[in-house]
Length: 104
Length: 104
DNA sequence: GTCAGCGCTACAGAAAATGTAGTAACGGAG
DNA sequence: CTCCGTTACTACATTTTCTGTAGCGCTGAC
Image (tube, rainbow over all chains, first blue to last red):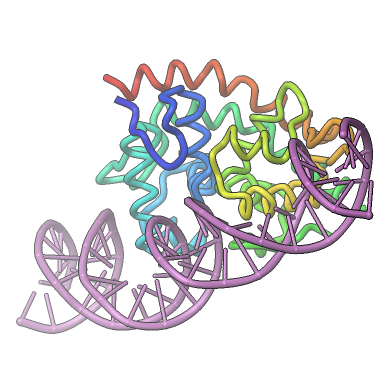
């Protein structure tokens, strides 16, 4: 069952997804895991958020099957998580263009 | 100058973008504007957030040149905003697959 | 035993979001 | 002119969320 949370009461997958991704630090965490697994503290230091919130976001991401904890390697994206990341990769390039447009 | 905000102090465009998109309701607002312009109240009713936050998010999105207010039509995506949306459209399809995977 | 590193938690204070009400500006009807 | 409806937007008290700091319990090396 998709967890019904914060503003997404419709049960529509896209709404649940937008709600999940729209939480503070979630996109950033997925981004930080894009290349290699990270340890809890390593992740926390990289994004500069409190351990409380890092932990709860990781819990949500794990429940959403986008992230998993490997005892040896640390936190990493699941197969599903990597699929999602692939959809986001073009953002990197686009953000450069966007930054230039906003800067003017 | 890209606005430095909440946890994105690096000045890297991708971080500023992830920070902006990672705010509550931002992704949802962009999504609601995907097809046609919307009035302030219409938008507010559609997403079910308080006018305070709808207004401040719209202000941020306008500053980021992703959304603009047309006096006749209402709020709508800019050219830049539509480009961003196009990157997000695959999410719709993917979210269905994701929902099935999480449900099991 | 100590020590370091791991994931994770407690808790008080600060910040952000909510919900409700209301403001100010406009246009049209009477 | 007044009144009504609609627009975007704001004020403010309450509620929720996040931060910052400290520390817990566990494991393994020494």
